[in-house]
Image 1 (spheres, each protein chain N blue to C red):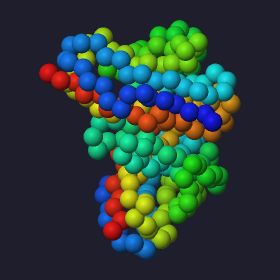
Image 2 (cartoon, each protein chain N blue to C red):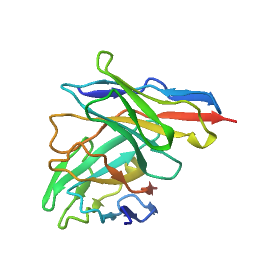
Image 3 (cartoon, rainbow over the protein chains, first blue to last red):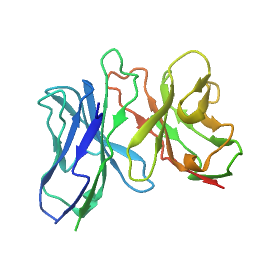
Amino acid sequence: NAGVTQTPKFRILKIGQSMTLQCTQDMNHNYMYWYRQDPGMGLKLIYYSVGAGITDKGEVPNGYNVSRSTTEDFPLRLELAAPSQTSVYFCASSYGGHHSNQPQHFGDGTRLSIL
Amino acid sequence: AQSVAQPEDQVNVAEGNPLTVKCTYSVSGNPYLFWYVQYPNRGLQFLLKYITGDNLVKGSYGFEAEFNKSQTSFHLKKPSALVSDSALYFCAVILSSSNTGKLIFGQGTTLQVKP
């Protein structure tokens, strides 16, 4: 199993550009999450999904959008990139349902710089 | 507000000595408790969890953690530190009332093990 795979690993964007961060998991997990990690700030939840077709906002959703058309994929879209969105983005997944106390599995992140 | 605190930004320990990374929480109910480790340029890796039962839980790489309900703490420990244990450690909780598996993270503690 590959686990949680994120692409790209690195990206530099110009202000105002848009892009999609890809996330896919092969563990048949129901729950998926997007976080951003800023230095000294821990992880902040952007969006999450408890199943295909269901998404909800986390702590810091502004400037982002998500979709969940399949169990495996959970892309994160930045529509108008701003310097404040420079960060490291992590996707994670977990079993969910009756196993909502199970650990999340993380990808290795996408390092995004907006100049 | 529900929160997790890691009071030390950095912990320094000599190789071979015991280590402790502290975590306290302030949440409603009886949460599920987790420790994760993050190596440079990698995603978070699950170390161990406490759901119920024995207050001392053992996890990966020789780590263990002690749940103390009266002190609302879940400190991470290892009897003998290795240089390779140097990394960023996160404590996190899932609320027992949660049906989304959302983690509430502490700010992280950098562990530095010196030879």
